[in-house]
Image (cartoon, rainbow, N blue to C red; front, side):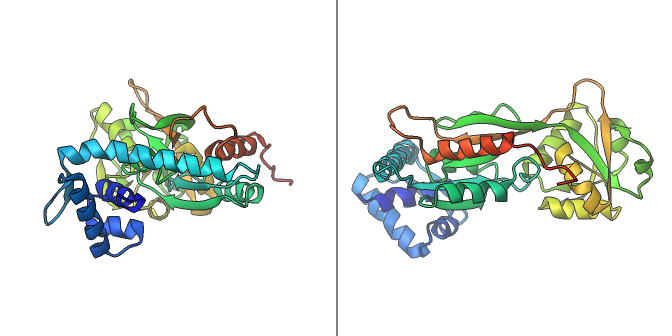
Length: 311
């Protein structure tokens, strides 16, 4: 059994399709198929059930998955410990990010500062969905990921570090009739056409939760896949939207938007919450890991005074 077998197995288990798993591992699909067959033959057990549309883990596959993840995580920790013996920080840091992270994290500045401080660290950044991020962190394919938290999610083998929370506000075009007010009742918004994100997006799920909790219906006329398009549609008067307040503040001037505080009866509106996902900290390392050094850099940047309009 080789390390590649474990990596290929985990990728297929998490992606659920040979095509996407092969793309993730940067190999051809036939090579991935051969690797999985070799692993199943060595274990003497079928790890996946295959259909024309999807690949699913068998009971044996489910059992082996956690062990495979643990092996790769331990291997990654060992490599990092050995590479850092001479005092030079090496290793890797693979980050997962959210599309709506910019108002809360000065990401470009953060990445530049970390890379300047630790140039020997292998670095990688990729946008992740809220569905895939926890498994990728648990399997050590991603070392740290920012994650939107909608409910009381907990994932075995994943440490959840609260990072930021924000209030929800409504936005409309600066020419919309609602732009004459500073606030709006939630029940009044149900009469408006909504520009929403697609149903799998975390913010969309939170907005759906708001209306469900208050037993209200709304007209989701436009469903777009990214926030920039959502803001663009709202700015052109196609509808209204509900977004986190920091996102609204950062977009108001450039998109000619108007922000409205939402007045709602009980229950209170839920918060937009962002957490950091990583694997639980180990206490047997003599030096800080790349994840801990990244979190230190993030904390230092967060403590810096924000520039004023005069600077």
